[in-house]
Image (spheres, helix red, strand yellow):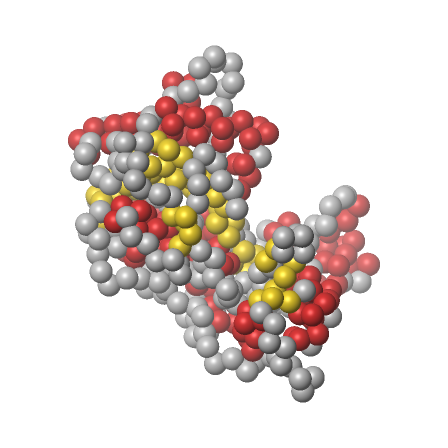
Length: 422
């Protein structure tokens, strides 16, 4: 290894300079950038630049000289005065994050019985309503709740109507989210969804949703949150939609600033408690044992590729989720509802097995004492569908800062309304 490592005092480095400083190839730097291990910054000429301090941290992490573990469950000791309703609560990822940030829940709604059992198992003090959202009357909370939040499922809209507004959304779960907002009239609203909502129906679905929220009296902005830069050891992107009631003109939009580090699986799995997990059939395990950390089906011999992938071998696309083994030194790929799905394999970095339930929970940043109800497969599904609590924490701190009109420039950025996407 070079003895001159890190003597370059330049703050921002090109790909070639970064590779020389850290002692790897330029292709490795580009691969780390693509995988989200290190964050690229853009020059005015749109060249990728890398911060030397981030490179130092990454080098220490990969080559074992770092004693710092960045994995932590974020939680404030101080509660705010603000109250929140949480819709489509699932296993409690967003709700727990907002709670850890200091917000106070007055109601959580969820229809899935297993998720409700999980919520009640962990938070007996929460008002958890196990009911079809369409049957809930929210009018009694008008003027009593500051925030309405919901991870509404993305359902297709009909474009036959002329108005394309609130009434045209009827029959969708977004309509119920909007109805709650209309009845409660909170100061702040937050919706979250998959990144694909940006492109759904060529953007028309999101456009209609934004117009409905504006029709209800809210200024609206949206932005992609990349979880791996928000204290989550996972490359998980979510679309976050924020609304501010239009009469509150002096409240700006805040969004959590991306960190200059990521959290690796090595950090996340340190002292991870044992738990139940799926197992591979004998032949699949024999094949997966030949895949190196960070590798996939491409690392197998051609005969094994054809045996494992069958018809998929002859189809187009990279198919890099197939026979995928995770890497110790990177955040996890996005978790799915099961760790052993053929198209989206999530194999342990070292042991030849799917990730356990507790490892899933660690990656999503649920505390170790947060228990999940139901069978093993049901637990995987609840965790895989959740918003990471640490991401919820950062969003919650921004919401509180917006309501307080006071924010930390080191932790937050201000972004414009009417559809900003970062």
